[in-house]
Image 1 (cartoon, rainbow, N blue to C red):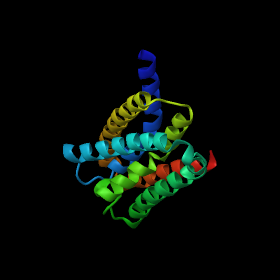
Image 2: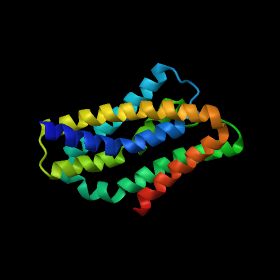
Image 3: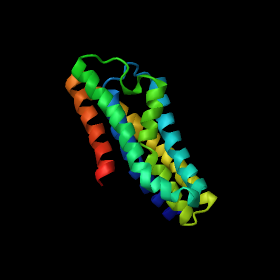
Length: 185
């Protein structure tokens, strides 16, 4: 049981890195930094990540060829859109409607950072993981992703208050770079 918890935690940390990066970069422009807004982002990111892991496990053999072929493209496009919007808004001088200021953007950010969880879920299905095993992994992914999103927002907000538009531009560049890395690596 200890080994299962450790491996689930390591999986969760590796899947939550993108969520942390998106949260930190996007928090720079977050208009509402209330605990309810932070909780909404964290729960949404965690749920999307955990649900896509389970969805991949459920789909298993059916989609393995398709998910592996297009997951990186979908993730790259979503991150490119979010990061590109940030770059455009910083360049334009406005800070309206960037990233996590609306639920649609929160959901897009959650999806952009969770496509890999779908592919990982498919691989677990192919490996014969049980419902109990995938449930433990999905729960751990939810918790770690939610916590990493909270930490990202807190850290990103502090950077945004200090560095403003250049930080927004830099955050957008980072997200686009992560998206490009999906295509290159």
